[in-house]
Length: 215
Image 1: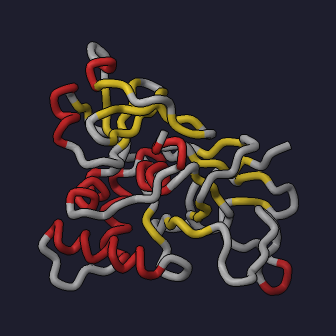
Image 2: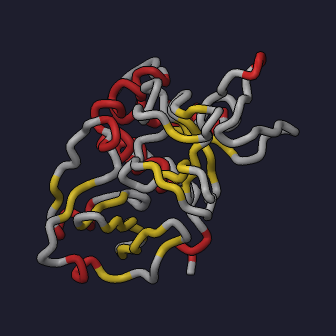
Image 3: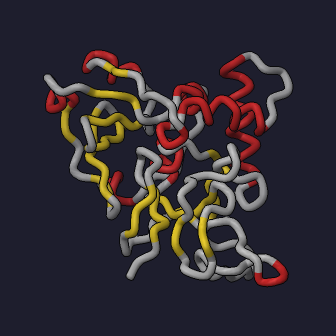
C-alpha cells in the first residue's frame, strides 16, 4: 500500500504509487511507527524541493532517519518542479544549492530587495499557498496569455500547466496533450502557483518539467 506522501499542485498530500522526479519536505509531519501523516500538514514555513538522489545517502520514507531512532523530515514527492512550485515549495539550499541561490536572487530582483534571503521567500509563500490557508485568486481566460511558462491554474479540482501558449492537464503520472486556452472558456479559473513564485518565473527562473510536457 503506497504511503501518503505524494503532493498535487493544490498542495494536498495523497497516497498513490507513482513517485515523480523530486522529493522535498515541510518538516516532520509523520508518525514513524505507523508511517502515517499527522493531522498537521507542515511543521515549518520553509517548504523545499530536493533531489531524489544525493551523494550516497539512503533514507527510509516516513521512517526514523535521525540519530537515536527519531523521525526525520517527512519525504514528500512531486511529479516535477512545476508541480512543487504550484504547491508552494522552493528549491533546497542543501542539495540544490545553485538552483536555490538562483531562485532567491530572482526573487530579490522581482521585489527590489538588495539582499534577499530564503526566509523572506518562505514568509511570503506561506501567506499564498493553498495548503497553508492562502486563497487562490481568480483569473480570466484573456489573462492566461500574460503568464510565464510553468504557471499552474485550476478549473475546480482539475489543474493545468501553461506552456508555450497552451494548457496541459496535470495528473500524478504526467501531462495531457496541449490544448488551446479557448478550451478552458466559460469555466471559473483560479491561479494555483503562488504570486511570489510567478514573479520569480517572470524573472527567468526555468523549472524542471516532467518528460510528458515535451511530447
